[in-house]
Length: 384
Image (cartoon, rainbow, N blue to C red):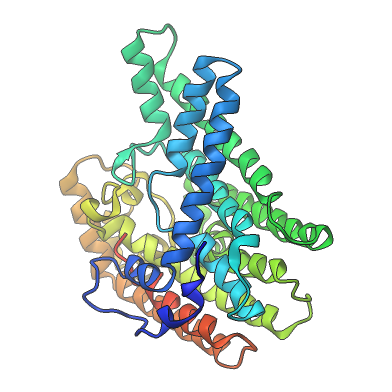
């Protein structure tokens, strides 16, 4: 990396950047962390090229499988988790430290993210991701095209599970390449392991909620948001970055990151809940209304049930059993009419306010404070 511009003058821009791009997250990340994202992508490309070559030596089919896993990792995305981890690290070390020593660890979070996405798509039976067929659907299509025996859908799911597993192993392997003291890397691994445990906990609660919706509540939906999304999207990546910097557990910065990360992470998931119902498929890369088709007990749907009058409740009770676009649109209208969507917007705004308050007195590098201030808004006001 020739220079670390993300730590200097590149941050002397207004965080919001209205009109710079259709997606505020991409606008902020492009302005604030261009070198970081370039570094993460280059690290992933080089690492994955060697891994695919190694697996190709086992068998040509294994090489093709590994290449598919690689393509899942490199298929786009905003690199949100490495970005928050970077600013967690930068906020602790200041603006002079070059980031090359921690790039492998930051990049490993993108492999962990791919593991979670691929498995989540199998559990949700999703057809598309980022506008393309999901890993299990693509594998099933290749099975059919090749004329293989057996059930193509079961084959596709099995391949996707293995892709996710491989990405988890790759994440561990890449993290070990970070040029930090061995003792510190052990602390980083403890934070990373806690992130993974909390992600699995949140994912299990998410699955349970879909199968026990009658006993679900707004509080439990927010608990899913806290562990499935907030932990591994914002809060733990920030703490991961602080661990990379060698920050002590009792440092006030840890408390500030914890408070900020929980607030922004929950707001991030609440925005996802709204996008899952009202998002533009051309922008989100996923069909609108999937959460209503499956009856997924998000905070949005739970609030709608709580606020609904008897007639609205009868319509909402159909969530999970509708199939036509017209019925989904009707459900979405009723959710809005209950006031639930507006309530969720207020919840997002309240959490962003809480996050910025946490940053206000934090002992943090000023460049990082500026970036995290912009990211708090951008990550929760996005359209994809």
